[in-house]
Image (cartoon, rainbow over all chains, first blue to last red; front, side, top):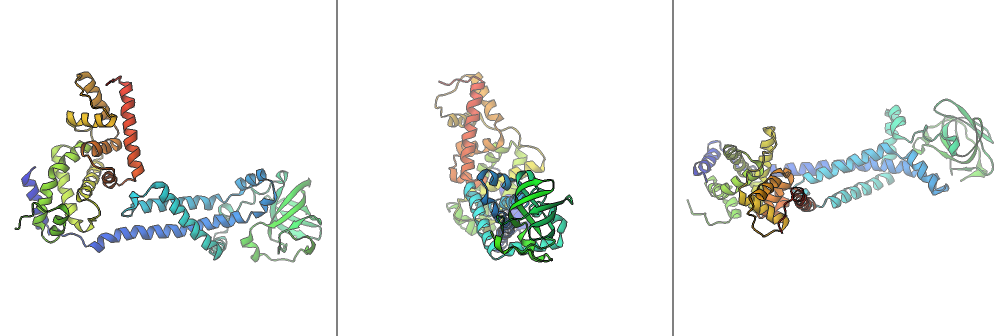
Length: 249
Length: 191
């Protein structure tokens, strides 16, 4: 042991008047990680509730076989929100690890608890309709971004040969609905007594709808199920109603 | 000044907050231990280690209020010494150099890792063993050093390297596997 160096250290402490930092100041850093963690959990929960909202919005898939459900879920999954939720989980885990005792916890436990906390918060947000209010706000402020990344893509859901088409209503009568897809092609949708229409859905011009059924000819489609394509948007649509009281889903 | 040389680390921490002279006892108590620990994990020159240790003790003094008595003081100070050595290596933009271990230390790590109690006298085998330990990546090596040379418990290692228990256990296990694999490659037979 170098005694001179030991003495030198204590001398330096005295000469430079180094004092132990206050407990509060030291703890502030630890609190900061907790604040970041809570903030990330809230944001992550919002993203996850938006993903949930989009997934719940495709409840009509349960009328199809399992294979088709998986196929459509793969096509329409809200990847944007799922990705952001995963980013939030990762940042949440990293922030937790940075807290004073965070490194001691088992990784699986930390990940599970973070996912659980975000999931519970997201369900609360979903039931308090924070997610749909947020999505409406984004749709209003950033319509292009919303259309391209956040809502289920209309283009993905336009697959007549796979039994599904989606688009905007341009006109309708008792037996037909005319929709326009994103390529501006107009399709005639044939509505019959057997067609199931989403409860409380009033078809209006300008509304985005999704139709399940069969292709019956060029730009013609026989509808089995008709649903609103983006429930969060339907209140802002204008136009006259399609009267179809006999064929509610 | 009252004689505190027989006081526990934790008692000295409490006293040092009010009287910096008491801190000298802690510095003297840990100087050699930390000197060899930093030397083993970093391969710094003696001068670099001395500089690094000065920084460590100043940090320890500055953050005395951060010391949590649920830890052992030795664990906390090892943690600071390790982090300072790593920061120092980064600052110098150099990976920690090859290890600086005595022959008996090398053998102790090796024998504890592969559960061998037999003496190894063959010079050729000894050289091969040295090169195996020497080439171990730092993350395994530092855990092996803490476990088998510093003889720290798993709980202490977890707090020193700030990694979860599973990660530490798997680093020890993988480190052992690497050593066994290299033994096979280099055709070292100890039975």
